[in-house]
Amino acid sequence: MKNRRRAAARVASGAALLLATVGLAACSAQPNPPASTVTPTAAYSSDYRTPAPTVPAPLRGTLVAADSLRSPSLAAKIDNHEDARPQIGLDRTDIVFEELVEGGITRYVAIWQTDVPELIGPVRSIRPMDPDILSSFGGIVAFSGGQEQFVDMMRAAPVYSAIHGESDTESTFYRMDGRDSPHDVVVKATELVGEHPDLAVPGQQFAYSFDVPSSTAAIDGAPTGSLDLVFSDARFPSWIWDAPSAKFLRLQEGSPDLSESGQQLSATNVVTLRVDEVYDYDAEVPRAVMVASGEAWVSTGGKTVHATWSKDAPTSPIRLVDDLGATVRLAPGNTWVELVPLDQGSVTVVPPAA
Image 1 (cartoon, helix red, strand yellow):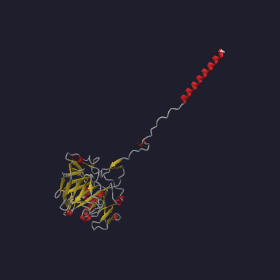
Image 2 (cartoon, one colour):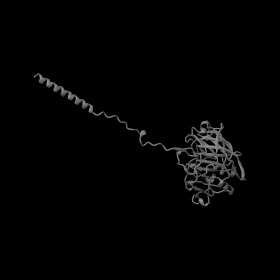
Image 3 (cartoon, one colour):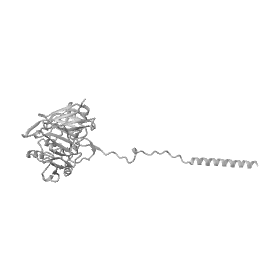
Image 4 (cartoon, rainbow, N blue to C red):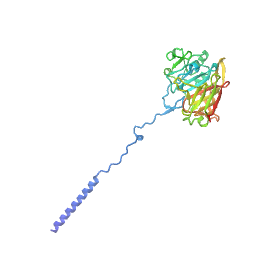
């Protein structure tokens, strides 16, 4: 009897041990609780791509996609007679030079590359300083003709001359209805540029800062309410600082200067150069001496800094340095260059009204 009780106890003990072992195994077989998961945010998305590289536009200094500006520059001799106003396309220029011509009036050498309009004009004839102005840009120059000696000078420069009345401009130049001759010759600008894909992209003409506040004039210049210029008794443009647009607005003879679009012409930078005028080719036609040096003012961001300009050769860009000899940096944007004559012109920098 005693032996049977001992055997039963051993069986019960073994069963208990077996149940404990099975229970332990069952517990150990339970899966681990799921780890918390984190959904990647957009910043870590596998679709992230490195931004395309950018470079400064050569005639504006604004950042553009690399290799996006592959076309040559287009310059045009733009009329500034009262009957030629409002001009077409001046509100989209990269750089404009204003120069004195005969009779005390001015004309423009306007240059586009960043934003070429479909149509520009009216264009007029070439003048003797234009080859020296344009040789550093290369590209194309559009004009309506001129004295043979001046046309020959322009043809000899490293710029393609597109001249009204020539066989190669029959499809791109025409006289516009509603305008009086000779202030009616206009150019199909984008079409003309498209005909010359072999011409090189222009080189950078000025040094540029990162933005308006970091430009030389904005940092070191004197506060400027307006810039009043005199070319002659007939031409006295001015530039008024407009803080909301962060640009200088252009007036001619006291009235707002408008483009055909109705927009008042404006500039991020106004570069004023005092230039000597000579009459070495024609007793009636002045030539601004461009391969030279002289006094300058650079107006950007509502301020103006005094400077010196120099141009070493027709193919060299204009160099600007401040009174300490440091390179003047313009702000990214469009620029007007005013070639104010030494003998009869004047430059007045007017501080803001109190």
